[in-house]
Length: 78
Image 1 (cartoon, rainbow, N blue to C red):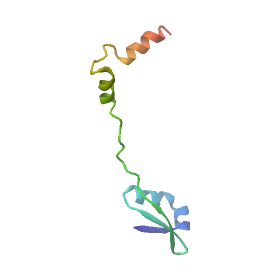
Image 2: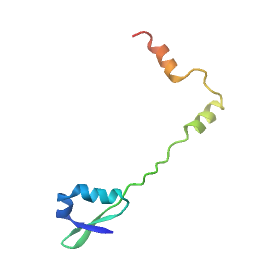
Image 3: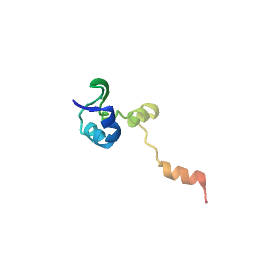
Image 4: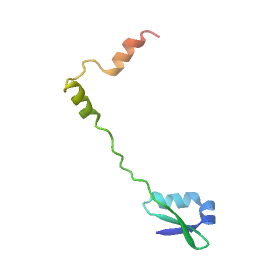
């Protein structure tokens, strides 16, 4: 883990963030005592299974009309 003092972090935030974005944890120190950690965010995000949910709700039946056609029909001429 790489460490930066509070003053170094304030003056070089973009450099500290580049280190974190590369996947490393960063420690922030005050008077040589560790006071905080900055850790990278997990890049994987669990997405809901929309297809599975729609098949469960509508029993796997497909919709004959796409959403943009339905919207055009509802909005009419503009």
